[in-house]
Length: 305
Image (cartoon, helix red, strand yellow):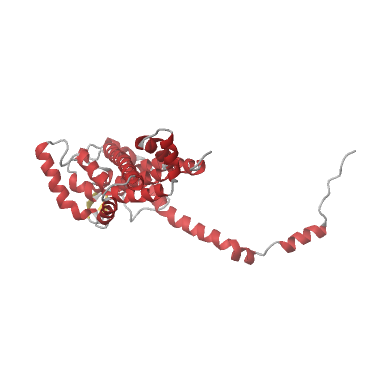
């Protein structure tokens, strides 16, 4: 026997209409949040939309540029890879290589230091940790003269490790944020139960085994965060790279962008915008890849049965 589906009558619809909040009440409760989010999204996306428009605009001027160009062109992008004076591909490779190596070494050194400060007991541990924190108070540009002099002395010994080399710049980047990263990671290690270390020792694991098999897998989220912060900061760094690098082939992307500035209030805005868009792609890609590690590490949990 077929069942008949009950349909809401007019009184039910009227009751639903009465219970539905008015537009003003909805705006006071939730609508203003959507409005704030929309304004924030427009405020954040407008510069990106403008620089994309400038990179596709045939008019090489910001004064005559429009958000929606009258004529679109890809000449600004093709010019970057055909010009001999502006090797953008080389600059991007240099920036990516330096940032990737320096960020990875930063994470490795910070992990070693944080493990020593958190788990090992040795004389002067507290004083050494305090000294690392105090050194982070002073900005890096205070040591520009000393770093330049040190790089020049290294060049007198070996041209491959001194001034105008990526090797020396990576060493500077590696030591610049090691203290802060070690302190940040130490706080995370202190929250990991020491009973895991004791259980590993009972099974015969030494300090190295505990570090590689217990500590590193559990600290993967914070290691990914440190890697992202270090990579983005090093990729965008300008002052130290400009001080220590002088050859065009050795330039990083931030230094190369300066070559598009011809004089005051005059620049190749189309090529500059196209280079900025291309330069942002490695940062976005690395951030997305590392973000997966953060989410995976947080959902796995720290202690498993």
